[in-house]
Length: 114
Image (cartoon, rainbow, N blue to C red; front, top):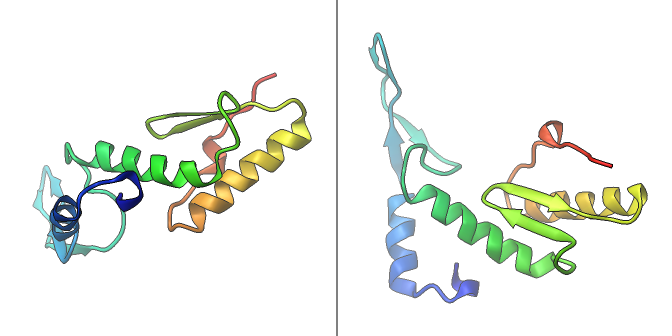
């Protein structure tokens, strides 16, 4: 967020919202016991999608090749390549760069088109 010019006071406010957070799960049988949330975005928070986009934007600026070869939309990525070999290389670069920053990529949800 700092790399995108977000002011320190706002960064501190967001960080405080994610520090020592506890939640519970609501079911038809009642609420679970509270438990700590150590990773990920807050489910159901209206701020979470915006934070995700900000983080992805900051990460992608470091290793994006050039538009229109990589297109980002919310939590989706489209990679265009001239050959299958180049496509696999680019996708692996994205996956490695994102995972090196603590995020996970679900390759099983990926699709290829001719």
